[in-house]
Image (tube, rainbow, N blue to C red; front, side, top):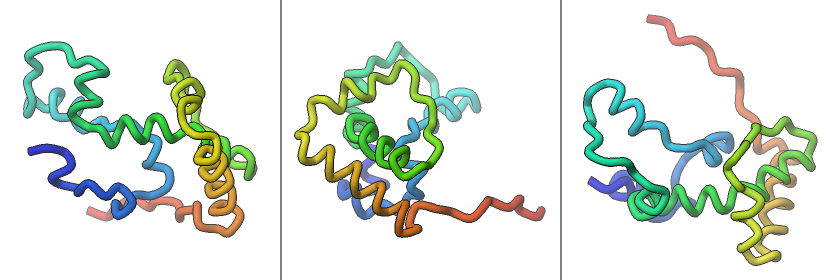
Length: 122
């Protein structure tokens, strides 16, 4: 089953908290560690783009929303060696500005906060 079969192709319809949109997908690593998935060869970045194109689009697009968070005074994650600025440089400038300003506006309007998670009772 392809990843998009589960979530659908319209990324805008996915219900994800703001903080999740820049996170890498670690599901595969967990499945390997649990023995539910066996690796037959090394997977390259080109393979990952083919398997999960939405992740590639997200990686290319995450730099400017992060700048918007910073412009709004929020803490930013460290993203060493991901080349986010370099990847973003290929995007149209108008789209990059829209992403930065839109994220800043979400923070300013109070739409980028979540309550502190609470431990579940067993």
